[in-house]
Image 1: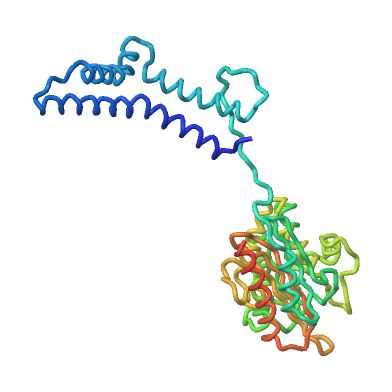
Image 2 (image 1 turned 30 degrees about the horizontal axis):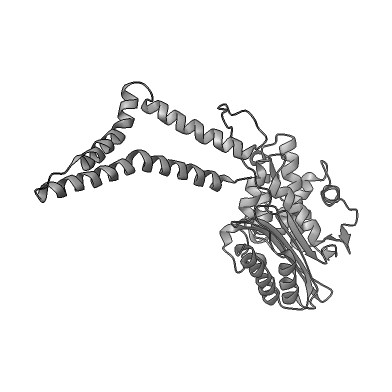
Length: 372
């Protein structure tokens, strides 16, 4: 079967042939005959009948299209229609060789949807990442929604989630608000001593912490952008009598094994599942746009460290426990080919060093995707 380029080539050939036959050839014959007559005249010779016959014949051929048009054999529109119909019929026969109907039938061109427009060499990419990781305690999961390809390295291994777990706490609030048509800008909370937690965040040093009323909208923003522990505790307190954060998380990752030593746990594959929920937003939750915006305006470490901050929506987390640093990151990278990447680690490296290493892994994946 011919493809679209073959059809164009055939049509172009016929158009060129007809142009040459009706225009260029008569002009050439006329020119040659005129040359013979002029040569005879310039040499003071009688030109005879042969050159004159050639000249007359050339003029007649040159005038044939005009004569046909004048007497109704073909109008310009008829010629155009005939040409177009001939093209369509010819292409239709090429596309359907068993057809016996040579009558003009309009061809309806359906849109072509290309599934998986390109493929990543996923095995080579995984090998490259494994080389960077070496024997370190790092797990990783990758998913490309464009090519529908994925791979993981110890993707089912449980790690302390650290502040990455804040993302499902915010999702719980956003889903509940969407389901119940709640405007989070109009729901306010005040701080209670039970909400206090040191570590990351800005509220612990705020002079208005104990007096200000905070909207849930602002608290969710602080939980993601600043990884604020007090804001995180406040939104979980709000949800306590509505929908348990832990139960929501269990349903989200389809597992009951979500707590280790009193801390939320996560695998790299669970991280991908959570980011898929945000990426696809199947319920058209408008708060997800706010979540992605906040995830693009948080700390520039780990997965985003060597990339353009405008294209990465992520939530990072770090926690020291029993002599080890748990350093994790989950991200959607909005490059020309969007993809999801989650990285979890348990290490004795410094926070800066492990962040740089995760950044190196992220950059290697980004560059490999860009080459495709």
